[in-house]
Image (cartoon, rainbow, N blue to C red):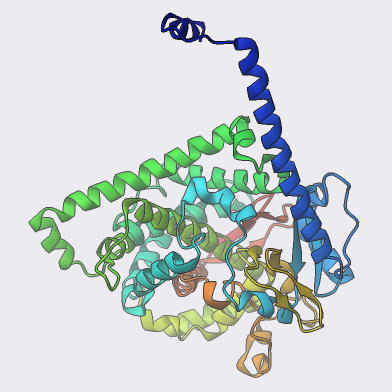
Length: 512
């Protein structure tokens, strides 16, 4: 540094160091004060906006962050019963949002297509980029339109066999493991299976993740979900500059690099293959296009395709949302059936009747799994894979009870609390699949059951997810009987996706 200053002096430029540093300090202080002023004005807006919504007392500095970190799901569920419809929550002093858990309130916000709350979802940018989950406005609409054909049932049909093959590998592993102890932790293996399936559906090939000791990509995604949730709960880490300086921040960046390197490599290989005429001809003869093929060939009305950055963002988004959410859904479904053997047996008998003498599933079989579907919906009600989603209002919203929120306010839909709201669901803690029968569903509010969000920004892959969960669950029921391990009950915890702090341990009994 001193050599640089001396170089300037040799050029005849006089440098007064004593004058430079005070100027830099003044600039830093000015920027800091501007930032603080902006935060204070924003807090004033939120405090005023939430004035008509009573809620739990907040710490003067931490808000509700400390309580949410300790046991967020149970805390919010208790608060939801104490403060009906909606109540404000604060992550620190400057980030506050209205937490809603009532269908009419959910409809008022989530039927409009407001953008995702940047305070929350920008924490994902370094990982998944600006894909469909985070995009807004015209570009979001363009991407949604380009990607929708990829989830048509003609595209999804051939994936049935992919799910069958991947689940068989997992079940074979369980047969070997079940003798090692009284119970088996299932989330890890279900996650590897879901990743293997998604790799085949996205890239046309698996990554051997189920038979390897551990997939580096799976480990990176696992780390990213935990680190992102921890960062979300710790408001002091919402600033990128501060977070990247911490050990957790550096670990986060390493995990991001691992996922990006993997995605970039696969995209480069596929693009190179498409330049070869023989490879292109082989691609056109494939029995089904994978998700990457669809992205590469997608064109809008002007003939424009996705950029490399857009490709990576959409692939990373699909890989995250497509395997972690189904992992949660399948794991909690098997746990629910383990607790309720009468429903488990009825689902098993239904699947056996559908298959008859066949030993594998077909697309048309999925629509016949009526009772299994009822049980799956009830499991998704009690254990929604995405327990909470956020929006930032781009115009005022008026609720049915006369209260309102201004433009710019942050809103959270707490799906976990909504699905356990006693005003909406009778005996909400009871596992009762028949509440989803056609006769019992008549008149139910369309925003009462939202495992895949709602409105124009609902989950584009919900049919894909339900299809995979049905196939895997049916395969599991044909091979094993599942029983709970009372000594190791799961503890639901939000890591962006609903997981268990203690894992999900089940006892398996092989069927003859």
